[in-house]
Amino acid sequence: MSDTYPVIRAVAEGSILVEYEEEVSLEVNRKARQLVFGLEQVSCPGLEEVIPTYRSVVVYFDPLQVDADTVRGFIEDVNANLMEIELPPPRLFRIPTTYSSTHGPDLMRVAEHTGRTPDEVIQIFSAGAYPVYFLGFICSLAYLGGVPEVLHVPRLATPRPFVPAGSVGFAGPQANILPVDSPSGFNYIGRTFVAVYDPRQFPPTLIRPGDSIQCPAVCEEEARLAGEKYLGEFIESFQNT
Amino acid sequence: MKAFRILNPGVQTTIQDQGRHGLMKYGIPISGAMDQRSFVIANLLLRNPDNAAALETTLQGLKLQALNKVTMSIAGADLDPWLNDQPAPQWTAFTMREGDVLYFKKRKGGLRAYVGVKGGIDVPEVLGSRSTYLRGNIGATLREGQILKSCSFSPGDSGGEVGLPQEYRPDFDRAGLIRVIMGPQDDYFTPRGIDTFLNSIYRISPQCDRQAFRTEGPAVEIAKGPDIISDPIPLGAVQVTGDGRPVILLRDAQATGGYAKIAIVARVEMDSLGQMMPGDTIRFQRIDRQRALDLLSEETQRLTRMRDFLK
Picture: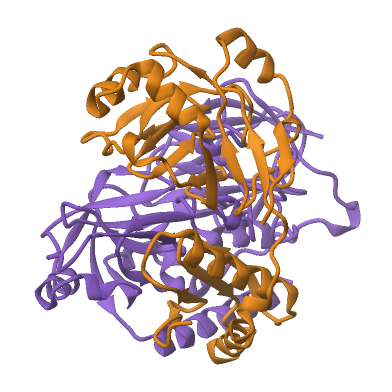
């Protein structure tokens, strides 16, 4: 492990930011997830929440109950044995998706940009299983990575003000399924009708960091039928770690 | 119990409480009343639990009619409330009889008023809170004709008609100076950029809501980025977007994002910030973390004294 990382520092009154190597990779992200998992097992008074992102972890605490140095001590202790922390087994979600210009306003553009036919774009994208780095932004958005290089297309210069919930798209190596209607600058090529976010359930999504998501191509009718089912029905298999 | 009917929802009225906590890892913002201090006071005046849901009404226009005898309170912004043909009391509990009409005529100071009802507003909890979060499809803005119920409470526990002394009423005119703790990505900006940030007047742009205040003013010079590898966004984070303008993230903000954060607003400022509106000007003032902690404990002690007074 590198000597300079992680960088651990207090941010504002009630949070500590822990940063691993400055890159988006599964290897670095795994450290962030291991730290979170480890911290969730220890009992530290005043600790409110621990959140992983690509390469960082933020630890929120109540500064009137516990001081930053104490929280830092807990973080350092867990980090010292990071590699021994076992993560829950990852799962594969296969979420039926319909791909077309009707449901994917950027399908033709992506085809042009990549020099492939729309069918090839769909075939390449739907074959991939994309790892979930973390959940965030709004409404449990899963930050997916690993889009094959042949499909790397930059974000739109001007984000679309409205993209419907369930839209499936990507930009650069990143992909997402929009949990709710949102503005977005990603390139959307299809749509699923399966609810990936439901605030009336706890947790509001079943997807966890470390899982993978595949969006197999189905016809629109089948995609709509799948939309009547619960997200949990699309957990296909346990993957090997 | 049916408490009141909304005759006019005003510019924007939502139901809020202390918010959802511990769900940022699911990308769920904390939401809740934008001015927590005034919200809690509205409940304390009614001897409600701190977290009882209340209305958060913005600017003007809310009009509601009591459907029963209800005990109410109004705290926060002065939106010139009228009870039938008389000015309604603020910062104290008062009674509405069946048929009485409460109307918020016009903003006089602050932006958001809290309308509390004895027992709290009865709507289902979603993810542990009754707070409306519009983007997340949790709750909705109030509609004309909507009937709101209040939760039951023990009759012996009626609200004292104790008004809040002047010394405990927040002063919304103080607005202007917003204290911040620098970081975590202030090293993404040039020394000149930091200087611009701390010595310029920024105006809150019309693009502002419960998620964020965008600002207008001199551009902060960026040394690298401003894109970072997306990381968590603490409450009150001040991001700088590509155009160099600071954006202050509020209670309905996204949990993670990819712009460099030059500073975080001190916690004691968040309630006053929740009372600011487009056109208001702010200047950021740097304080260190220890000073921010001292201010936070002072504020907590003040709240404790106020709580004891209202008991």
